[in-house]
Image: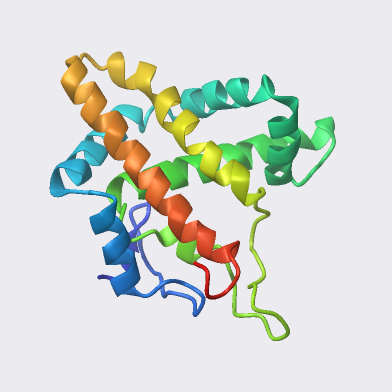
Length: 195
């Protein structure tokens, strides 16, 4: 596994795994159990080619779905830092940038998970849970948003002119990658020894 990931700005960034991060054998096992294949990796690269110019529309559609569930909208407001309306526009640009980076890394580096590795600055001195660089929603929402993230992409994938089998292949690959990332992210939420 390479610790050098290509970022959307086309510059290489060294990404070292923090101490809390699962080791490579655990990660490989999860991807194997999750039936993630070379075909899935190819499908994800195709997802990126289709969605890279539409990430704002994709996120806006997802946020529209989230708005229909006030409890979820309140929970995900943590990503806006809980700011008032006047600060949301600036935070929205940041959220769009984060989302685009997440989608880029998910589609092009699904097994590297650079964004997961960069969530934390350093191991804590007084607790087992590392300090986060960005706020995270409660774990139940991380898991339950996996399918809406994949389902919301479908209209964009369908508009690309691919046949139904290819659209399903891309959507399934995206869902697999998201679920496997949620499993890795679970390491931050689950009590030591139970992950």
